[in-house]
Length: 74
Image (cartoon, rainbow, N blue to C red; front, side):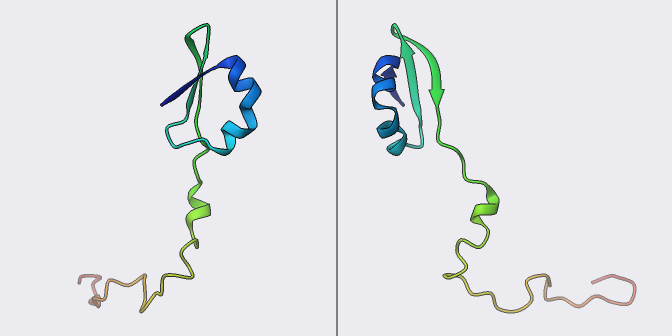
């Protein structure tokens, strides 16, 4: 994890946000950690459909492929 002094963070804030890695950034003041900046995690809703152009569904995705008997047994 990268560590940066608060004064330097203040000067370079926007550039640091653009290049923020998965591990984030520890901000220090007088050599002591005071804050940790982490990238915002993607919500699952953003992931749904994100591969729609690459994945093709075949068949009934809600079926196990097995038929059930009259008593609900398989």
